Image (tube, rainbow, N blue to C red; front, side, top):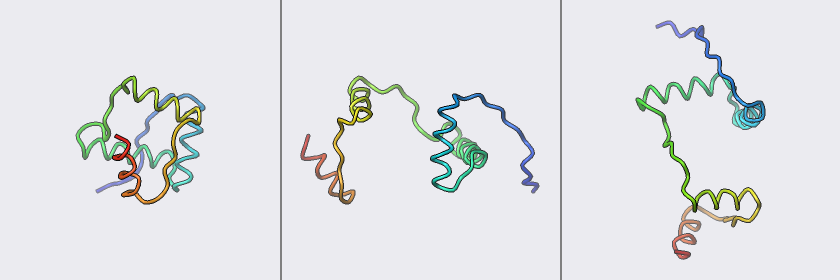
Length: 90
């Protein structure tokens, strides 16, 4: 099977988004082309988008805004401790 990378995709994105995404991808050792290929492979495997797409509700939008403003809580410890803490807060 020929696996040569000869197909092209042209996409226009906001320069800031491109720069931020490239920084994240570099930190995990993946270039943009490989990340797009990984995404497309997941689309094929999942037969759709490999993540849920939905608009955040009012509560989630407020939580996101709070976190971006530095108002969120930071939890440390292992995953079990974090979920135990969250369960106690309900």
